[in-house]
Length: 138
Image (cartoon, rainbow, N blue to C red; front, top):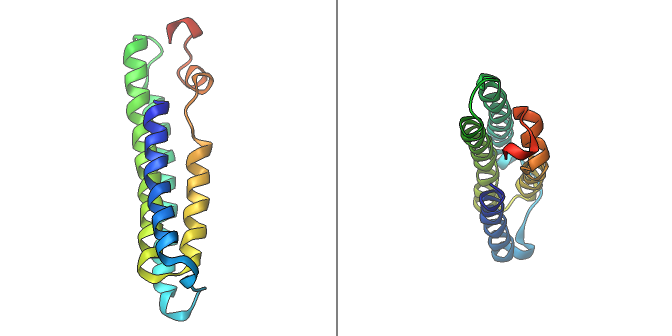
């Protein structure tokens, strides 16, 4: 899962670098013409991140204690991928708006959401804790 996580992070990070290099110093600050896109971006980003957490939690809660470890891990992988993809949608949305408007605020929103994504990096400890399984079962 770590390889997939890093691939997802690398994808939008490289896209962000390309956009920033293309725009260079031409980025503007917030003006009245971009206010609507800012509201749309903030709403969709917040909704996507919240939906990712909610769906993840609901899928994790569906895992039964008596399920086999392989089944638990498969269900966890599915839940984790759904959460990462919803957060990734918010990242790419802000990068797209940055590219369209040259407005620096979308870069800051992207960075904030990318940090949220980094805080959700999968680890063996988190997986063991969430699925309530032993070290030897992973």
